[in-house]
Length: 315
DNA sequence: TCTCCTCGAGATCT
DNA sequence: CTCGAGGAGA
Image (cartoon, rainbow, N blue to C red; front, side, top):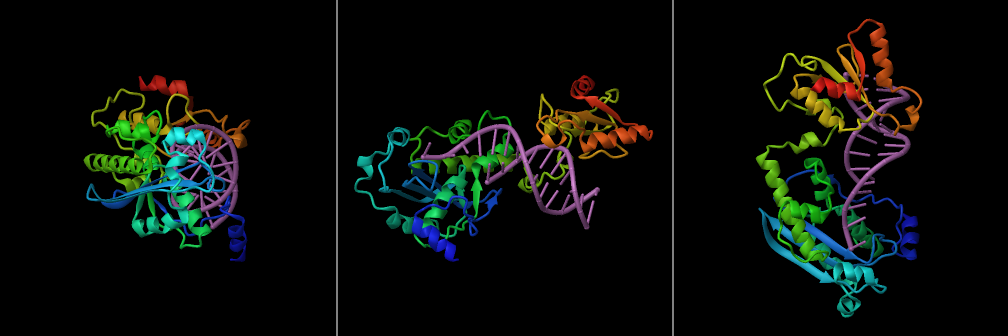
């Protein structure tokens, strides 16, 4: 592509440019992988420079190799980055340039699966560098521990690397250095895999939420037949204020009820949440509510209830 | 009923 | 980027 040549001559500015050869994000547990982390002078590959590579090669839960190198950036390291990472201009004064280290780094990772925390950041940064130096584009598939932990541990207050490491009680090591952070991420990933094994979680079922209700199974086998929920079918529209829809569905199923994604003739209750967030139906009714009203007029046993009435029924 | 599409909201990386 | 909403069209 001739336009690529133009972009390259302008410098490492690929903003908005597609990354056609970039690998895919995977939600999998694997025994062999390379955990990576980089330190940079900022968030933006267009204006910021890479100042450190770090990577550990893992197999069956053990570190079998590692890679680390500081990099001399094009421009000075801002003081707040030195404060954050501990990497100063003095430290990189005699370091090799990124064009010298990058090929070594690429050779180290080979075509292995990569693991990292918010690893899109690292991969995009490195991808753009491979293009800038006309190397084969970084195309490794990858696993993001940020994405994984959000799916698996929905009750955390946030999903920063530090939070994840604290949760898994990973010993405190130097923070915000490439090698120690990549090692820390690898240790967390091992714990995540352990959690997946012990709880027999099928990650494949997490890859598609098209049918939310189908993924929810009862957590108990003793039901109260007198509960107004028992034996009834529920659907939801809009966003609930007090909980996620998934958790509300779980409560229904635990009480012996059934959940559907949409409103059908078999639906008994439609729970109304807020639709304020959705501009397209702000002043109107959702398609689910319209269908429920039509079914009710036609004589079907369906009621449209508010969120609060729903909570009363749970009592 | 099922398969995409679009849109807004909210984090995380240095 | 990723997720979770509703919506359009087959």
